[in-house]
Length: 174
Image (cartoon, rainbow, N blue to C red):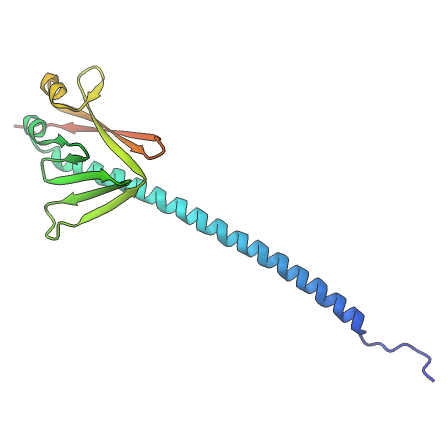
C-alpha cells in the first residue's frame, strides 16, 4: 500500500503549464509583429525624408552651379515650361504623373533620376526688390537684376502641402 503521493508532475499540471507557455508565446509573437510593423513604418518615413532632403540638396547644387553666370545669361536661359524647370547648364527638372525627375545633359546616358513621388508641381518665383513674384516672361522683363538674384522654389505635393526654399545667387564678377 502506498502511503504518500508521488512527487512527479501530473498530466493536468503539465497541460496547464503548456497552456500558460503557449499564451505567453502568442502574446510575445503579437508584440514582435507590431514591433516589426513599427520599424517598417519608421524606415518608410525616414526614406521619404531622406529623398526630400536629397531633393533640396540637388536643387541647391543646380542653382549654385549656375550662380557663376552673369545675371543676364541666367535671365535669358532659365526657363519654366509647363511641367519642367530648365537651367542654363542643361539640367532639367520635370514633374508629371506624381513624380519629380531630374535629367542632366552633362551625363552621357541622359537618364532621368526619380527624385520624389506624390508631387503635383514646382513653382519658381523671383525677387523683384520688394517681394517674390511668379517667374514668367513679363515679370522677368520688369525685374531689375542686381548683384544678387533671389529665387523661391515652391514644391507642391499631391496633398496640396507646400514646401518652399529660397536660393540667392550672386552674380559673377566681370
